[in-house]
Length: 220
Image (cartoon, rainbow, N blue to C red; front, side, top):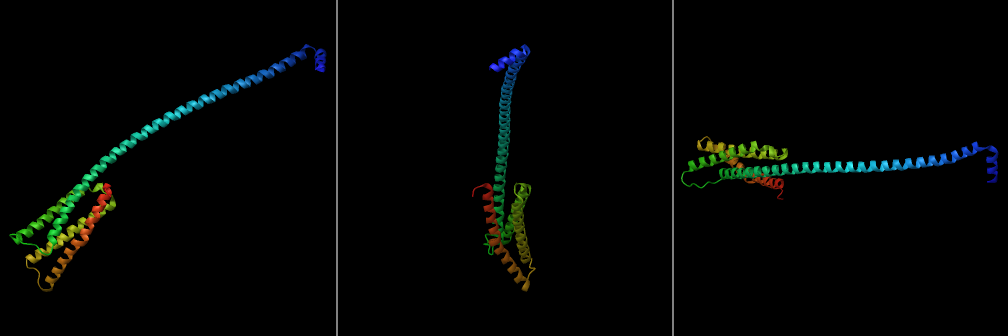
């Protein structure tokens, strides 16, 4: 310390002033940087808070938009499911009527109530009406079913049409006396095969469709 004082005495005021400037300049620089850092920290914290608020607003806006779209989807899906359920109900009703008319037409023995020919004609008419009602309703509502189920319904509809057509043809040939001998025997065998196909294969297809309708409606 004594040596420092000697240096200051011999060096003059200029050195003293320089030392004072260095000392206070260093403190000023430290103070400046310290204040600058604090200001920047406050700015960063404020920016962070602003960013958090913006993200929170965006999240709320996105959630609101998502909830709105979800509600719209649920409404549309609920409406679609309701319409689809009504279509399935109506279609199944027509399918059961068609099946009943087909079973009645293709059974091996028909009791005669009053007039055999008239009653046979009525059975044929019932089948034709049932086929028309089913096809007319199904074709305009086919869009409610996926491709796989539509293909199954197409196949079942064709089977009903095919078996009824073939059986009606055999009846007409019998009625008009166009069969005899071996051909008569073949027609009898063919009619029996149709009856068995209706009782087994087509009935099984109807049962499978029933289960598929239940699955679509969510009741199984």
